[in-house]
Image (tube, rainbow, N blue to C red; front, top):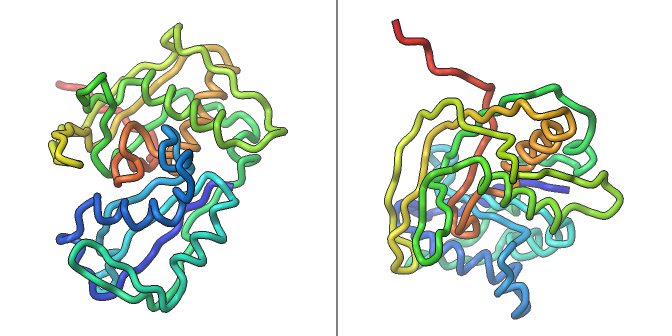
Length: 244
């Protein structure tokens, strides 16, 4: 089942940890074959290092594949030493599960929602050839989530059918900004902030969109989700106040 885990790294200054440092550690846990390393879709994402409290720096990992759980618990167990760039730490505690949602809960029922708000808590970007765009347009957002669902959802779930050619979802409100960063010597533009999406398509389409929005906090959105980008959280839907 999709899950999110926190790994606390004692003594690490998160401001001195680059996303490449963290990616090198976590990818070594999960990308154990050439095919896994080269795969376009990965069953895990990483949140950048940060301080959960004043005394507990660390980072988060999400998993879409249950078979990776034991590997995470082994590689991030108490006493394990990690190197993050020039810094070293020894874990005092193992990976802590902080959220989980069974796949069956992601598919259960129709919430009746026709609008969704996502907060993009880390820069979110999308590849366009050899360039990147920071705009989380509905089709690339939902297309990526649909691909993750089809790739990692277990067999036996109701089929997820979503035709994006009809543009069933649009952006109604934006509250955010562009953030530029460097990753692997590339200049990447990413969106941070909140976006409200709406849909007036038939019920089966709205239900499919709702399922994908529930998956988003675990699957991540856009490119470089294994380097800390594209981390989102759902929020209550909101609308910009009307101007006088």
